[in-house]
Structure formats: C-alpha cells, structure tokens
Amino acid sequence: MFVSECLSVNDAGHLTIGGADTVELARQFGTPLYVFDEATIRNTMREYNASMKKFYNGAGLVAYASKAFSCKEIYRIAKDEGCGIDVVSAGELYTALSVDFPAEKIFYHGNNKTVSELVYAIESGVGRIVVDNLTELERISEIAASQSKIVPILIRVKPGIDAHTHDFIRTGQIDSKFGFALETGEALEAVKYIKEHKSVELKGIHCHIGSQIFEVSPFELAAEVMVGFMNTVRQETGIILTELNLGGGFGIKYVPENDPVPYMGYMEMVSKVVHDACKKYGLDIPFIVIEPGRSIVGPAGITLYTVGGVKDIPNIRTYVSVDGGMTDNPRYILYQSVYEALVANKADKPKDAVVTLAGRCCESGDLVGEGMPIQRPEVGDIVAVLATGAYNYSMASNYNRVPRAAAVMVKDSEARLIIRRESMEDIIKNDI
Ligand code: LLP
Image (tube, rainbow, N blue to C red; front, side):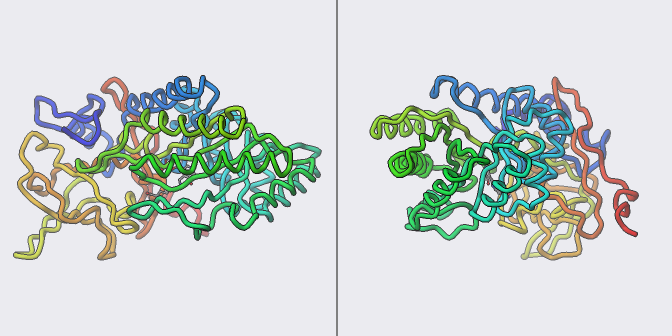
C-alpha cells in the first residue's frame, strides 16, 4: 500500500515504520526527524550479497555507496553484513574508520581528491583507490613511492553511456567530469602509465553510469563495454585485469507510479552479459563489485515534520508549512524530485487534499513537493514524507542556521537515536 514495505498503519490509525508508531516517535524525539528501518537496510544488503553468491559464485563484493547516507551506525551495519563501502571524501573515510570499518573493503572515489586526502587514504590502507584522472594517478604514484608502498587501484572509465536521458543513449564520448574516456585512448594511456610505475598496481576498472535508473539495458551495455575494454587492455599491454566494479544507480520507488526492476533481476541480467562477454574474449570472470547507495537506504527512511501553518490561496494552491524543508531534504529544490507524503496521525483516512508542502527557509523555492495528494493537514499534525533515506541527511545544510535534524533507527518496533539533533551550540561552534 505504501512505497516501502516497512510502512503500515496501526489500530490508532497512525503510520508505523518497522512496527514503531511514527506519531509517538515524533513526540519522543521531536521533529524534523529522520527515521530508518534497520530490517529494510539489512535485508537489501543481504539480497545484494545473495545475488553475488548466486550469479558470480560468491566472487564479488557489495560496496554500499555511503554518500547516500553516511554516519557511524550505517557503517557498523554495513560492516556487520559483510559489505564493503564506497567513500568519496576524507570525512566519509574518517567516519567509517572511527567505527573500525575494515579498510581493505573501502573504495575511495572522487574526481578531485586532495593530496592530503590521498595521503590519508594510502596511510589508512584503503582497499582500492578509484583513480579518476592522470594528474591524480601521478600523485598517487608519487605518494606511494615516497612511502615505499604499492597502492592497489582501479581506474574509472567512462563507458560512453548516458543513462540520465529519458531513453538512454550511447554517445561517442560523454560530457562528464568523472573518469577516463575510452574513445580518445585516455583510459589505455592510464593503463600504460601504471605498467611503468611500480608503486601503483592496477587491479581492475570501474564505471558508474548514473543514478535512479529503471532500465536494465544501460547496465547491460556498460558491462559489455567494460569487459571489451578488459580485452583491449590484455591485447595492448598484456595486463590481465581481475576486478570489474560496475558502480551503483539502481532506481527505487518514490511514488506509486515508479516501477523499479527487482535488484535480483538487474544482477541476473547483467551477470549474463558479463559471462557471455568474458566467454567471447576468452577472459576469466572478474571479481565483481557493485556500489548501490540509494537502493539500500532510500526505501528504509522517512522524514517526520510538524505542521506549523496552513495557507489556503483560493483557486491557486494550499501551502502547508512544515518545520523542515530544503535544509533536511534539498532534493526538490535541486531536482524537482517527487515524494509521497501523508499525515501520520491520519494515515487511515483518505487523501482528500492536494497541497504544496513548504519548508521553513527564507526562500520561495524551499518546498518538499508540489501537488502532493495528502489527508487534509491541520496545524500540529505530523506529516511523513516517504523514501527519504538516501541523499537527504547526507545533503542536509544549515541554511538560515537551521540545526540539522536528528535520526533514529527502528529495530523490532523500538527506536534508538543514531544522530543527535544539532544544538544552538553546534550552530556557532566554528564561529570565532
Ligand atoms: N558509485 C559511484 C561512483 C557514484 O558516483 C554513485 C552515486 C554511486 C555509486 C551510488 O549510486 P546510487 O546507487 O545511490 O544511485 N544526490 C543525487 C544522487 C547523486 C549520486 C551520485 N553518485 C540524488 O539525490 O539523487
């Protein structure tokens, strides 16, 4: 009935998540509040892990893309489930290491890693640095040499597939700030550089074609192009690459109309392409890595707000103002993203209104959504916005000096605080 299976309605007519009453959670922890269902996160990680066993004989790793939601607790859960992680800054790496996340299962990404970040990543012994460009490759090689280390790396390749257009297209050379191009020979040049520099060891190649993708075909095509490049590398340099990281990007259900392919379906179809292409070129099946972010945490999270005001503008629209907005969820102002919302304390009632959910910032565009069907909201109601687990907290800001919201994790109907609400002291802590 809802976009996520962890949501339901109890006898009081209240929305529940993981069996916990959201109206009670709002009362206990305050609003705005991010609420996550632990079982959903773990089940998705398990499903991806199982797909590695099933389709690659266990020779694979699920690296949770932690940019989707980064905090100590999510790294503890990923570690516990045997996942790896993708990090994209020293901050994410620091957070993961602070809870003893195994460094060898960390993939360090980014198109402009600073020298100090590279030094930190190398000193920490991260499993793979995913190299974006030649300048970075030279930097890594120098740092590694100065530390008498051999650093295991992947290179990020642009497979030339743009999955962000409505119908995905394959272009000669996509316009992207990430990675090495294939067509210009840039990627092969990087491989040749690595061959000459002993302080870097090329383990394999990486690609990531986009995010919130519903079709399987762009993933299949990317896999085919990538295995083809592994063959080129072998032919041109004699190097046998043993790892293939296919990135993340699997779409989730934000609104009932969204119809994502079940993750097992993606995995099965892409694995077939990998197997067929390897057979065609006479290559062994590489160790496979995937980097799902949104699909692991997105459906597991919701955001609770308190309604502070309702403004009916006859024949125009009804603004319902909540106590959060772009500061805790900037996805509408950035991408006009769509969400499902409901009044948590009237979850058993029909949605008899269509409203614009407005945030509290001094910014007209600060909306959570427009034209949202919802139970008619009144002041004091608790509004729940669904499937906010990914790229909400991680992209939150302090605009207007609004403190960042708290987050709780629900397990067996009980909630525990995993991120404290920011205080006024936090707001000024760096001011001098
Ligand atoms: N791997 C790499 C190298 C990535 O760049 C990303 C996402 C992922 C994995 C995870 O992709 P996912 O499975 O989460 O789709 N802020 C945007 C999303 C940006 C995604 C950036 N890269 C949003 O809110 O929609």
